Length: 239
Length: 239
Image 1 (cartoon, each protein chain N blue to C red):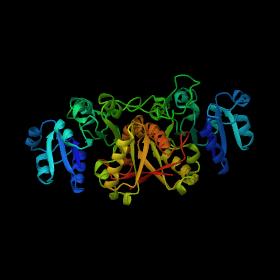
Image 2: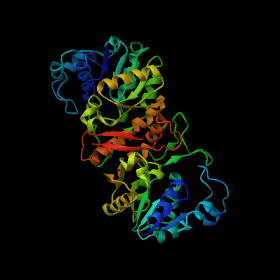
Image 3: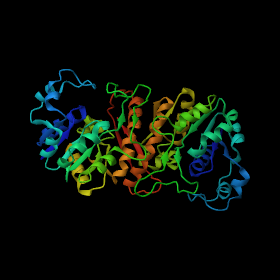
Image 4: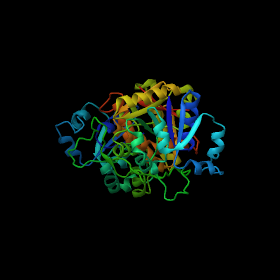
């Protein structure tokens, strides 16, 4: 399939690389491809410059956000930062119409663009906005009524999302939520191709609130395990 | 040990009953024992009237909040509703000084006292206050600086907290957070006596934010499993 992955951060890279491995044609989206390729410094998360990464990962076509989304058969993965996602996606709404958009962003608010996005060692996290009474996924769905938004991946590091067997042999749980059954099935099929065996459909997109708010718990568990940055673990729903 | 359990709801009852089973002397706390015992209707969660329940559970002494807390050797479990907890505990701060207070409340805001406290079937939950940038546990700790507050139990139904083996043979994870190592150890020892084998110390009390905000995810998972009211499942951290 032709699949678009919007964003050039570590999570988007993990999805793009794995999708190529699985035989898909991958279109990576960025605001300005020339600017993205011109960077020579690691990004704020310490990832190598995108151009260098792209050279090591043949089979990925870098395009502006709208062209990448337009090139997808159906599946578009949103890896745009939470605080930029609604604005960036609204600008390309026509290219996302009738498509499945899987959103895994956490709507963290950074006071400064330069602020380190990771929680401090004592567990204080950037503020979430929206939070509790709304979610980023619902905001995106309202802004793009023609698109079928699915929230998933967000409860897990993206490197583990694309390689669930790397933790506990893959014996942990992934969640999906959304208002469109067919789109959720596309997300579930993708997750199965990544190796997920336990995928729990939480129900409608309103359940994205819990998934996004879980970000604090995810970080706290990482601290508890002594994994300050990132966190290589899974969560299993034990019935 | 002499242990106090503040509150008369289903969670507080589960702890009180199990603590008696484990051989402890249990002091249940309520605002007004006479009023509590005078009730003849089930409470808003459908629990039988407290007096009837108490008659079936010998070994529990019902006292006003302050007297119950004062009777405890060290351990006090806070099962007072989240939106009443800070005010009720502040009034008995002197009886809680130097003691370990395990708080498991979720700071749900109900618009009316009569509002049904459960989430609706589509996953919308009562609002949390505080949320994200503060937690109820931190509020309690600030209000009671002489008390050693531990957040725990909150990620789980209390009937499962006191009987972890009832889900998946007990192969799931319980969390603690707090700023006082000795108090956390008391909580961990209590949890072990309940049968918990996997107890993860998340770190300082600020991690209570994630534990309280997990309430939405807990409800969503319950919905996903078709367990609309309550939820009989566990969460295991898979390393």
